[in-house]
Amino acid sequence: MPEETTTPQVAFGRVLRAARLKASISQEGLALDSTVQRQFISLIERDENQPTISTIFRLASALHTRPSELMALTEAEMEKSGQGQES
Image 1 (cartoon, rainbow, N blue to C red):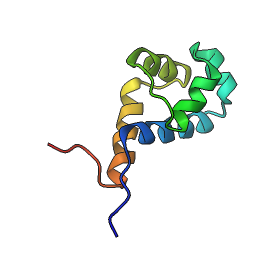
Image 2 (tube, one colour):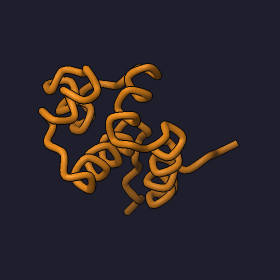
Image 3 (cartoon, rainbow, N blue to C red):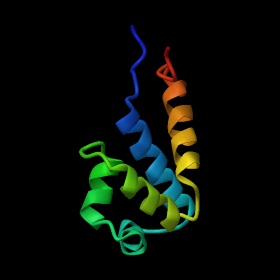
């Protein structure tokens, strides 16, 4: 049976949720701190929508991390399922 693949969108949603929970911030709190709608954060975490680059920067700032750290964690999440950088 083939391994289930993880898309960048799914991986980012997982990373965002994990970072939010690690920081003990609710979706509503993250929404207020990042000026992103709470519903949109929920949609990102559930892979039902995708953030823009500027939204990623705002989310990272609200989580007191760098956008590059969120992306590195997203890559690591993808590599768990064999979907890391492919050339």
